[in-house]
Structures are given as structure tokens and as C-alpha cells.
Length: 157
Image 1 (cartoon, rainbow, N blue to C red):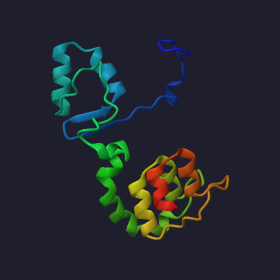
Image 2: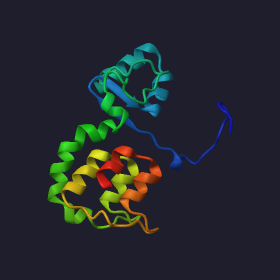
Image 3: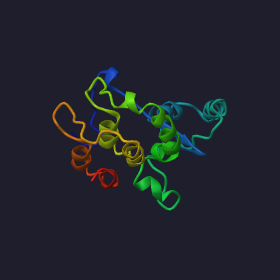
Image 4: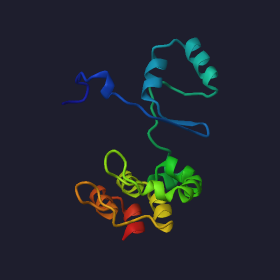
């Protein structure tokens, strides 16, 4: 494929994400695409209904500026902002989180694979089983190494 080339995929394979923090909106490709089809008055009405200014519909922010939030260059903003709440909730449900999900992953395996270091730290400190393995035999440390997540590896090694 080349940039600008048209690609057709089934609608069910399309997904989007959006994180709203403070006055910044990250992601929201679909919202910005729809807003780009609106005239100025319609965009203003849309933003007022949401209670936030989505800004220029031609710009989709993927991350905070490093000088504003350097911690987001290592950890996902969701992980940083939910870490303490996650720790509290997880502590009450660790036994349930040790059970593998439909893909055969425990919570620790899932968080290690997705790079949520603060969640991994909380799980390890609460006593999560670091020897648990994926159906293919990989541990959380194996997954973190495979994904090259040094901020996760440090909590598992």
C-alpha cells in the first residue's frame, strides 16, 4: 500500500478511540471526520452539545506535547490517570484477575502486553502470579520483552 491509496475493509473491522483529558482531545478520528463535513455553525453546535472545543477537524492529536506531560511518553495517559484507582479496585478483586480471560490471558499478562507499566507494578505488588503463561507459553516478562516495554520489564525482571 501507499499513502493515499484507497483500501476497503468490512465495517465491523473499523474501530476508533478518543481520550478527553482537561481541554485536550486525543484521537477521535471519526468525530473529526464528521465535524469536517459540517459547516462552521454546525461544528459550533456540535462542540457546544459535547461541552468542549474539538478544535480544527483536520487535526487529530495522538499524544500530549512532551514538554506538557513528559510522563505520557512512557505511560499511556489513561494508565497514569487511573493508576491509583486501578490499584484500589484491583486489590479487592485480585483472585478474579488471576483467572484467564477468553484469550487465555490473566490481567497481568494483558497489562504487560499492552504496556501499562503502572498497572503491572500494582499487580505485582499485590501478589499477581508472574509465572502465569499465555496459551503459547509466554510469561508477562516475555511479552514485555517482545513488545520492548522497558517501563514494564522493570516491574517484572
